[in-house]
Length: 112
Image 1: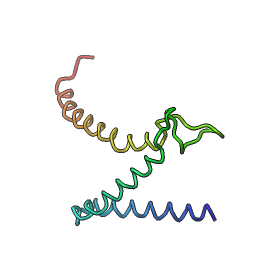
Image 2: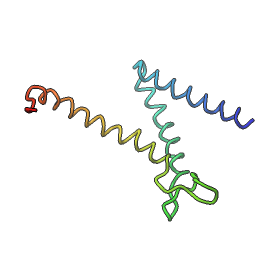
Image 3: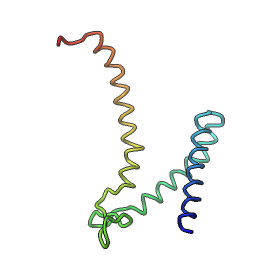
Image 4: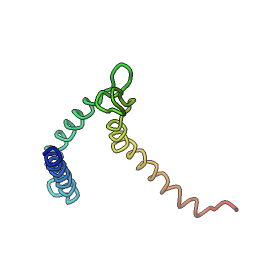
C-alpha cells in the first residue's frame, strides 16, 4: 500500500510540474500562471527546506546515513535546491560570457 500511495503522489507531483512547465513554455497566460503558481511552488520549497534545516551540530534532522546518525549539512535537499536555482543561474551567466568571448578566440587563435 505504501508503494502504491507513494506512486500516486509521485505521479501527481510530476504531472503538476509537467503541466506548469508546458503552460509556461507555451507562453499563453504566463503572467497569470506566474501569479498563481510561483507562490505555491515557493511555499512548497520553503516547507521542504524547513524540514531539512540543520541542527546546532550542522546535521540534517531528516536525512540519515545510518541508524542513529544524521547526514552532514548541507544535505541533498539543500544541495539540489542550490544547484537547480542558483548554480544554474551562474552557469547561464558563464555561458553568456563564454559565447561572447568564444568568437573572439576563434578570430584570434593563439599559435600552437
